[in-house]
Length: 412
Image (cartoon, rainbow, N blue to C red; front, side, top):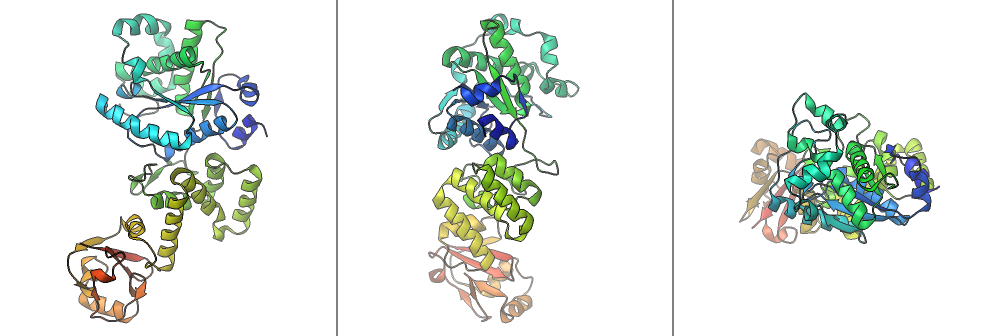
């Protein structure tokens, strides 16, 4: 398959500005850019597809530029947002930009990274109105979906002007880096076409630039992708642990998993079709979900963190906790009921304090009925004491009641 055919097969093409982009993608070596505003100091899985599309293009020989919106992030993109974003301070914007650049470089280490604060911060009001504003009619700007969707609820001039500022990004990159293509999610279509139009107005009709958008990622039921009960799934391991990241992908619904394998992995068409056959004939093996989780966790967090995530998952399934490291225990059990102790504690008291049982009587019954384990070992002694010297690395003790209920004790 050609590059464009592969992108289409994977469902990664929503719109293109010009059909001639197909030959350009397949035959030429373009410099292109993707942009992201530094609204947080980490990317999340909703950003991941854009970065992976950029990597596919880079692998084909195209040259990526990441534009971190240190300047545009101070304004706020209204695209498909119900309300105006909270404005960042310059300090927040630059701090967040540093975190995003580090993550982006892990995925595309040879890519050029620039921050549009560098050129936007020197723009004064007169230049903005004379050199940029004159190229945009109010009617043209009002026709953009990103604006129309907000008119009735209200939109500030700050956000209304966002498309002009982002358009200047494209023109700046075209002028200084010979960048001729912008890619982004479908919600960026209006910003991309504004940039293309500004380049033609300033540099003439012979200036050939292109735009490509990919679909926004949603679940098969139409709900938002990238959220769990505990919140957003981040790429930063301090925000979302590699184990939680792995679990996010392993819990992908059967109805979504083949789409995710196409969109997010670099497996070949033949490999993905073989996995799809397994999904259809032996769905209980969950080969598709396992492959997806392994590919993405390895890509984002590395082989060592993937191994940790698998170790934790297998330990939780089997109940064999004692072989986990303290770091793995902390990663796998951080959202479970927990308590901190500085001395020995009776198992019955620990069960009650962790709300795994409601009374001493229930605790005794559970212990006598072989339903309680400590660090993976069954305990039937109702007078059993939990001691620091027996803890995992003398830090953690994991109590399990029944098959699925856990509690965590941290020893000081």
